Image 1 (cartoon, helix red, strand yellow):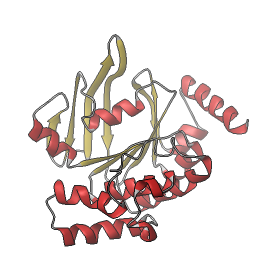
Image 2 (image 1 turned 180 degrees about the vertical axis):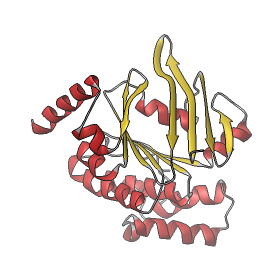
Image 3 (image 1 turned 60 degrees about the vertical axis):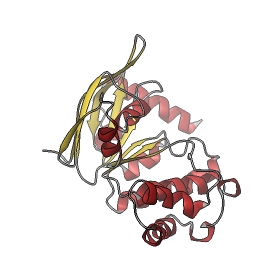
Amino acid sequence: MSYIEIRGLSKRFGSNVVLDHVDLDIEKGDVIALIGPSGTGKSTLLRCLNLLEKPESGQITIAGKTYDLTSRHSREINELRSHTEMVFQQFNLFRQKNALENVMEGLTVVKGLDQDTARKIAVEQLVKVGMQDRLFHYPRHLSGGQQQRVAIARALAMDPLLLLMDEPTSALDPELVGEVLQTVRSAAQEGNTILLVTHEMPFVRSVANRVIFLENGRIVADGTASDIFEHPQNERLKKFLIHISMLEES
């Protein structure tokens, strides 16, 4: 049995099928990058796993328990979310709280830790992402890259079994992308299990141990970075990589 198992995940918006009975096995320490054209269900897949979107069908087995992803029982939703954490494109920090308080919030409210313990964990995580000199800065006084690093620290502080990252650099100016990618790289090197959506292909090549290509809501290619980028077997994948290569060269 795999560390995490996803079975039969389907999602549609109206008549548009976005995910079509997706099955996925994830091993502990996997860093899996989801790639593919826009609109192929990559971000929707992440949002379904964290129950931010309600799929038509699907289940996930994590921490030895199987959850029905169509369930709307608050206890099950909260329990599943305690095992997963999402890093969004737009940071989603509490504007009225400083960096330290943003990271402490989930530890005290969700995990019920006392203030001293939560503060110790929050500081440790903020130091790891290079934000030790910005502990008491509010989001409005932080750059986009710094806000995203606080958001990553907040997610890691919750010690999730699965870290979901939805294009964490897409809202950043180009000069800020590198600092966030290095933070993600460090999280991967520490053994975190990560499911990542990104268009940063050089980064995918260097950090992901698995790359999954989605097309029309289905997994049509799944392999190592070398398998996907250097020895693609699927014709649609080949065309996608040629297109990406042309964009990188332009």
